[in-house]
Structures are given as structure tokens and as C-alpha cells.
Length: 463
Image 1: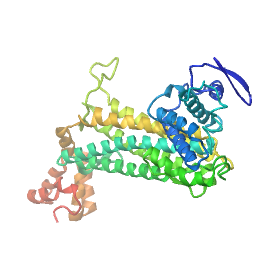
Image 2: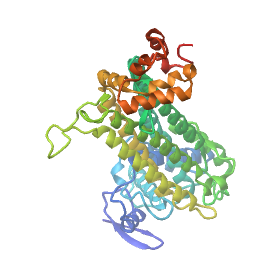
Image 3: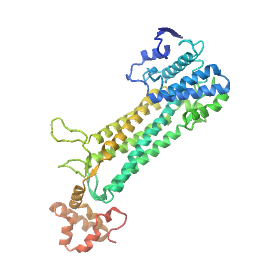
Image 4: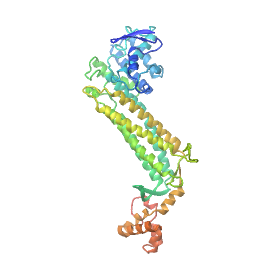
């Protein structure tokens, strides 16, 4: 054990660990989720720290004899080392100070080790004086959230593109499969299964644009704003280079916010990112529900789609198979919607120059991105790729439909068309049979006017 102290007193720290006294206090104080900080967030914070180290060395404020081992320590964390040295709970009081100091302590103790010094020799390399130079939690923590979101966002956007592309493939594959469209869960007019798949792809692409725009808008950072955005303890030279240094470290474009006070106390950019994910989740819920309905049955439902069989569906009913992949996408999206509510409540609960609720924002946004990425990839791999259309059943519902009478409106008017539909419903006879019996149209003309495929394109059929 080694002894470390802060202004509250002294604590014993296991000598093998790289974190220190403030991390231990946080672990004792915040036993909330039973989880640790997201690995990607650890790496993002290390990238922010590396950028700050480089900026401080470029101004001459941080001596190279201290800055270079700190830089090496940050690079090691970015490369995946010491990730087990961050035990703090992701939901924590203090606006993220615990995680910021956890990172500072690990960086400094590793830098001390690199230079041949004992861990805990903060008189040589200090978490507060050197690891936190020209910084505060109030600028490093939200900046690291932004870095992490944009990095995780790439995986989510890739998953959504994977989904949209496969739906577009299915749109082409199913372009000639006619079926009945439904509104209000009632028969409507003909549509192709390919057109339905294309509509799902279009909605997913729209979700991607929302998410991309929201992620682009958080490229403005408040590094150098320090405590409240006034720039106290950050040199103008540091402020001039920190965004460029972060861009170099991450490979992403970052810009210094025009108003650092605003960028420190407002977190509406996070609300935009969360809302974009939520809105995309709502689209996915609707799509998954449609798949479940079209696959319902197989004997007593629509059964227009045959979903791949992934596991037995019941512990008591032999042979039953459930749409589990669509169901789990639904449930994941419900969680994303719930996470967005937590983010929204946290965003509106900032006071004056700081929003202290950023840890719960980060926790929920990171989970939403991770969960949604996994669920979308699973939907494509486990359901969509092996999906089969039930052509026979699609044709069966089409043949029984009365909704095709809609194509008659331009030719015989609404009133007569409605009477024909009413008679077909009450008698159970095919609409075509009734039209021919009444001599309203010849069979040749009827075939032309009531062509189901022609009804799936703009215009008046038979004109």
C-alpha cells in the first residue's frame, strides 16, 4: 500500500494500481449502476488529455520532461492499455470530476513509472497541476463526451447503412410481388412488397441524416473555457491551438466554440444527438412491427413474409416459432426512447454556468448508440438477409380484396364504386364477378382498368 492525500485527508492506495486517492473516494461514494465507464469514453478522454498535453507543451508552459511521459501514458491508454484502471461508476456526482481525476491520476502515476519514480509522487508529476493543466472537468468532460459520441456514431451509422442497403436490395428483389396495402389495419389498394421495402429503406436513410447532422453540430468544443467558460488559467496561446491538437489526435475536425460560456453551461447539442437516435428508433419500431404483422400466422395470420426460424418459440406449444429478432429490435428501441427522456431531463436541469448532469447524459447516449448498433446489425444478420416472401399468400389476399375497386372511381364515380364494394363485402363474392355480371364493363376493359400492377404507379389506370 501507498499513502496518498487530498485536501480532505489521507487514504491508503494499493501500490499496484495507477489510480489514486480521488478515484478511491469516488468508488466509495458512487455505487449506482454496478458498471464501469464505457471503454470508448476512457479512450476519448485520453485523447482529450493528449491534445491538452500537446497544446501545453507547444506554449512552453508544460516542460517536456513532464509532458512527454504524460503523452506516452495517454497514448498507451488510447492503444488499449490500463483500461482496467478506471473503476468509477458512470453515473456520479460532481459533473464528471471523479472520472476526470481518475484519468489524471492514471496518467500521472504511469508517467511517474516511465520516469523511474514511485507512484504517488505527485510533488514531481501532479494530477491537478500537470494532468489538469489549463483544464477543468467542465471542459474536458463534455469534450470527451463529444469525441466518444462521434466515434461511436460511426458504428451506428454503419449499422444503419447496412440495414438500408439490405432493404434496398430487397426492394429490387421483390419489385414484382404484388400484395395488398393496408391503412387502419384494413384493406387498401395494391402495392408491391418491393415498394414497402423501399419505403423502410428511405426512412432509415432519413434517420441517418438526422444523426449525422446532430453529430456534426457537436464539433464545437469548450476546451480552454476551464471552470465557467471565461478562460481563467488557460493562456490565449493554448486556446488558439487546442482544437487543432484535438483534431490531430482524433482524426476528426474540431472547432473552438465562439462563446465558451455558452458552450460550458448549455448541453442542448446532446439533446439533439439523443433525439435523433430516438426518432430513428421510432421508425425502426414501426418497421419491426410491420414485419411481425406480415409474418403473423402461419395458418391464421397474414403470413406474407416467412421469417428465418431462430429458436423454438414456446416452452409448452410444440412447433411454435416467434419473431424474436423483430421483437428484440422493438425492445432495444424502447430503451433508446427511455434513454432519451433521461437525457432530456438532464439537459434542462443545468443551472447558471454549468450543467452538472452530464454523467447521466453520457451514460444514456453511449448505451443508446451501443444497443441500437447491436440490434440493427442483428436484425440484418438474423432476419433480413434470410427473409422469404410468401408469394402465394400475397396473391391470395390480393385476389380476395375489394380495395381494388378504388381504380374504378375515375371511370364510374365514387357512388357506384361504393355500392359495388358494399355488395362484394356483404355477399363475399369477388368484385370482378359482380362488375361483369352487371355489365358495367367488358372483361377486356375490366382487365385493363383493374390491373393490380398498374395500380402501384401514379396515374389513372386504363386512361
